[in-house]
Image 1 (cartoon, rainbow, N blue to C red):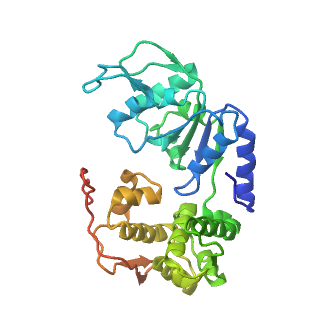
Image 2 (image 1 turned 135 degrees about the vertical axis):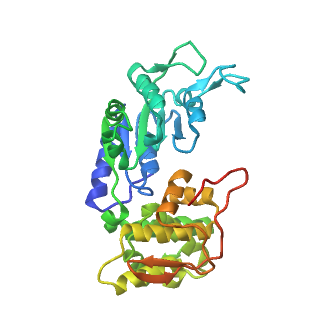
Length: 343
């Protein structure tokens, strides 16, 4: 795995990754969704002395509160109703290696206290157990920048924050490292083209110009999805502007025609609508593509008033309007799930 960058901001990140990888220190990786927090955690592990040991990840926001601790600490037989056998948790599974805690700010206070104890004592007990289990684990915590506000608001323990943030790596938004856009786009084109045996596929200068005029609220993940779409939809070796998703072409035309660019929130709303169109309303899949939890997706849908979309939904950017194409969908639950109220 390599760091694709010519930008000063990412070069500083790459230098910090190299420096911290050789240590056993805990690391806090901050950044907006899609900036590459997962990839950074993997890079640290792969360049560390623990590279041949387990690399284990748990998404703190994806599990209900009642299941999170059992997944993290494991449990003994009979610890609770349904615990018919003992089970080791992610902490044990990561012994000797690296444990990645994604969306760390989602931990409830009781779990925060238990995690702090693990970090301080390097031991813990399974749920329902009394035998201490010694572990040697490096923790890499991932969070968006709101965790700092959570600490200030006392929603996240400051002592745990400082234990996790022995070294803090803040990842820049794609718009803040635009020097890397051409190389990132070319690398993604080669990656997706090679999967289908289409060596020689490349972006036209016009397509690259269209990409360069867009603000990418979804950051590098959004760029990756756009390039995957373009490679799949293009039958030619030279991908033109027409091979890019319509929402990006529309947004690019709109931004080029305006003296003031749309806000990041406006573009984010357009992108979320496009992803929901692509998944035909499947919010679990949409959240995966966006790199956020379902809960976060629902919050953003409420904020941007995204519910039922018509066959030709209208996206508004700073008072201007354009059509976001896609088939009609209605907000719905995936099988076996129940959506909360969106009103």
